[in-house]
Image (cartoon, rainbow, N blue to C red; front, side, top):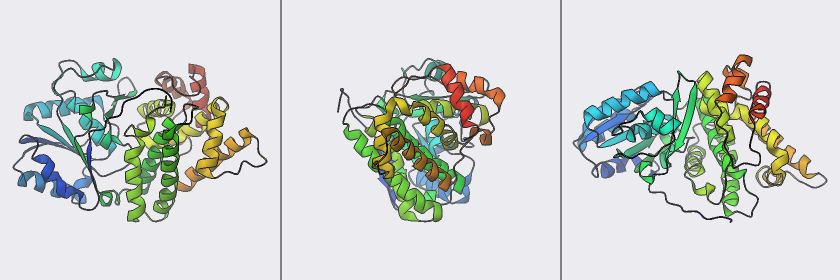
Length: 391
């Protein structure tokens, strides 16, 4: 392990069939005014809403609601939520849903008492909050983002066609508690399930494909990736398999709670490009990542050949005997592509609605980050995007 780092994760997790039973215990730690935040209403159909509201009422909470949080939460929705939370004098924001709902709750939490425009302050200038933060708790119903145990929040501005994530440095922005019941994920449509699975996998890859030292984080990442591959194949054939879905839920949390990034420079360019694709198409996040991953990895493979070879051998069981390092590495990416097709992931951006006239704009909206094996130029992003249309 090279470099110096700190690690702190204050989020308390409750996992399993009985995890919602602990919501009342957590609610006792906060004031009476709770804002319940959720998405399009599926939690009302599957009964989770009634369970949560019953617990809130049993704990004598005053409840306000922010409903209709979309998969890619927008600035207008953020402003709406800020207004509701302010008028309710919120003591706790309780997010019930998937990663977008949790992300959104964190954006509201740092904005309720903020005097600046939150889009400009947090997503353009990337400043940290200098105001009182409203605590967030999560009841997770979809896995993939890892938002239940990190300080990240992604917001989309439809006017400027920008989808930007901010990973806040202040650990108090992390959810104070998260409730993870795998049963709550079993009713997800197949498309959303596999999109979440790839989001998990790609989060691990973005941290794994960086650095060249013998890093413990890489060994943990390889184990997580193998677990995701194994459980995804079971869940793809039998979405009601509780064991597989529970393993995916747990892997999603550990994929992005900052543990496997320790000692790593990390490479988030697939997310930067994929998020820009999402800003133009409003496509499902995990599918945007899937559609740009292979063209990107093929592009940077020569610059990180040793790690790509290791990925092929240790994650995909590619036998390097008789192969060059490049051939081994490429076989690993082909194994990954085969697995992606097996799950039914979207493999090209044109299927998501990207057209030739969008390419320059998407490239312009892709924030270029250091940390990976190759810092991209604008023209390289354009090339990757063009290749991504016809994978």
